[in-house]
Length: 305
View 1 (spheres, rainbow, N blue to C red):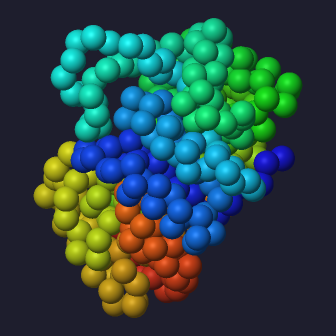
View 2: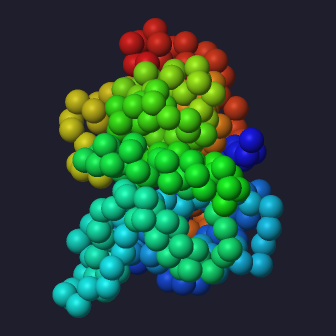
């Protein structure tokens, strides 16, 4: 069974998520994570049309003793349309994403990821966002990954999504090792609890991602976005109530947001994105600050959990 570090670096920001990051800044961010003891790194072809994989691979190439995950489900094919990417990454649209959860698509995706990474292997392969392709992902992508696991090509397989219903099907119908769940088991959204409980019951380990719900829980004074859209007033008010109770217990809102998913027995790791070394340093410090049980009791008493 693969050992999963408690803290992971999510590298969508290093694929120029929303705003561009220089090669030097991306490398410095990975270097800072390494210096803080981070040994779990997550990427995907989707992130910056391969840019995240290229940058992360370059930073890890001369290192060992880490766990690396990438994803399958989107193939990158060359495009001559020009312009900029339209799916949230500040990169040229020199490729386009093509959904493919077939056996051949999975094998091709991993081969191309290894080429971009410049590495000989990844540890974890995740089926990425099969929201509208669950049938093909279950029937073809999963058996392909299970075969690779049996051959020792990858050490663990799973699914990575920002919803919980389809991952629950995988947990119930297949033999996954891990689930990466983004944003559905957080201080503000515990809708993914049925999935978390199923994972605990079946021994599937959870990589908790999106713990800040894209920004609303990322600062002591809540503001910004929830799931990449402006936060509705009622959700903003709820976050501010949570923040006030956190403050009363000597805890910051992001500190509590990082700690919350770790309370569930299914959670093995918390994966936090970062685009600068200072963000890595801040997250590492928050991760290591204990949160008193009295805070969780107070949030329960107020009906906020």
